[in-house]
Length: 263
Image (cartoon, rainbow, N blue to C red):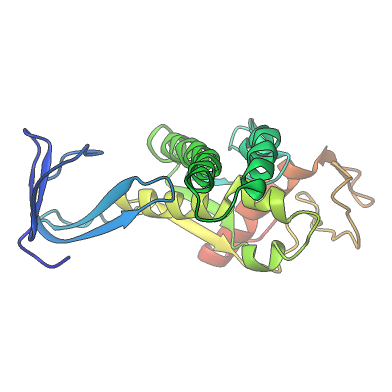
């Protein structure tokens, strides 16, 4: 919508050009001039307003990249991510948790006569399950990125530039990849890092972070996903493959950014 939109936080209303006094729940309060308001409606009938605001706040300058304040983040399917201290955040698999209930509701939906009231009612039931899963993912990713950015002394975060669109072409992994919402996690991490003057470094999609030894840089020819331990034939390192990948992501990112050795 164009300009001439106004918000009243005290009364909890949103005033639009042709619609005044719309009751709203605001995620947070803000100062500044409202430029545009974009309205959207979900499949469950909920309305959302995305408000673009012009403020006088100065942009936070990104901090200097420091080796000892840089952490690597490895995103996975078994674990959502591995943090700088090696702690693994379990993947809750929200879609899988709701799969049985969703299948039952979809089966009921398939039997309904199109355009009937029962058809529309059951369509809404299915949409609500999908919405719950989506909001669960979003809530978790907000919490994890907030913890990394605001409750961590690191100033730089190294991640992989994942080719998610190509990865979901794998029919065996597509559902699991969609369920972890890597793209959403990275988007939240990047804009929050920008807010707080921190850096996000990305390594190339073809960098073999999982197959490379983090100690001696020897590259393994093959390392199937079923193999969870990285065993180096050269230096005899034995390490969890995800921990090994996290260290490599950090080292490769710093090498690209500062011209340091990747080992």
